[in-house]
Every structure is written in C-alpha cells, then in structure tokens.
Length: 188
Image (cartoon, rainbow, N blue to C red; front, top):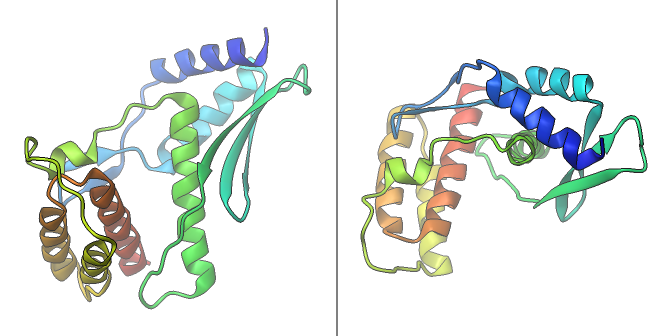
C-alpha cells in the first residue's frame, strides 16, 4: 500500500477506537480531545499500518510529515502557519511550548480527520449579519481576555470578548485561542 492508502486505513482504525474526551470547555459547555487523549492510540495505529508521523516547527510553519515506513521515500506533509502566544506571567519558552502543543494537536487532528465539537457553534448565536472587527478592536478584546487575573474573571472577560466579536469567525477563533492559552497558564 502507498502512504495515502495506509493513512486511510489508519483513519478507519482510529475512528473505530473508543476514545474519551478529557478536555472540558466550561465556558461554552462542551468536551474535546486533548492531545494526550489520542496521541498514544494514534501512534499505535500508525505502527500497525506502517506509518510514522514526525512533527517539526519552523519559523513560519509547523508540519506533520507522514512517512510510509516500508517505503520511506513515500511521504506527505500536513502544515499549519506558526502562531504565537503572549501568556501573562510566562517566560518566552513557556509561550513557545503552549504554541507547539496546540499546533501538534491541530496537526494530528487534521491527519486523522478527528471530528471535534465546533467551539464557534457553542459560543455564537448563529445568524447575525456579516461583521468584521478592525485590528485595534480585536487587539482590545485579546487584551481584555489576556489581562484576566483569575478563572472567574477569565470566564467573564472571555464571554464579553466573544460577544464583541459578533459574527467575525476569525476574531472568535483568536479569542478562543487566547482564552485557552490564558487558562493553561493559570492552571500551570
């Protein structure tokens, strides 16, 4: 089998596995897969079918290279733009670690076609007219979430920021990422 056929087999096996979502978004009320919920089963399935996945990070892009272990010249890459985090009270390396952990998760989610609850469905009202925040408006909402000093304040600020995004889905994603990163830094 070629690398693509093997990946399809791995995806099928993965989706037959009974996995538990341990992540819980208390703000929007849904459960999600954390990286630790699926990485070991994914690696075991990759081994069974003869694939290996290698995550790498560059200055502008994170990549998951999937290689056919029986024919190492057969591979393909799933990529994502690099991002950044500015977690309050964290060192640069902690911010880097947060970014890398999130990107690893998203790369594997893409590779395995993991279907997750849509966080935006849980946090938006649905049928508002088209709306686009300016960069300064988005920066203000990011600052509101990032300046939270405790979990209760984070929840209130997050809800206010999401509401301020209205129907701007890009802004909503940025605010969700900011909230998740801030929450992770508070729990660390």
